[in-house]
Length: 129
Image 1 (tube, rainbow, N blue to C red):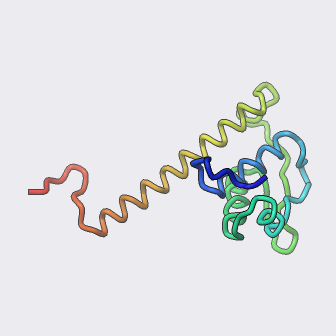
Image 2 (cartoon, rainbow, N blue to C red):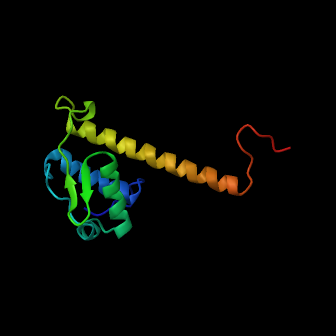
Image 3 (cartoon, helix red, strand yellow):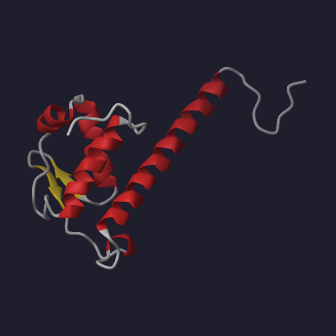
């Protein structure tokens, strides 16, 4: 599934969302290997770093574990409130996508703040006179 250029989310978030969808739908089951980085590059039309960042995002969320020389393996779904059987998978997916978007926004805000600090911009609460 190629990246959607109209989607405002970063490419790695889109790739991670697609893989997460495959995991929550059961297309990728616990113990299954994720597609290789090369395969993710081919199927999603992304660079290796984008594919790598998508997998890291899934690791951070506790959905996969990566073992050197073995690839990334889908983990057993925990019984967390977001993933219980009482919560529809599409709601879980929406929650994860929202969390990813908030994390991305936080990263972007930090980058903007650092850039402004580097330019000597006025800090919040400071006066420019």
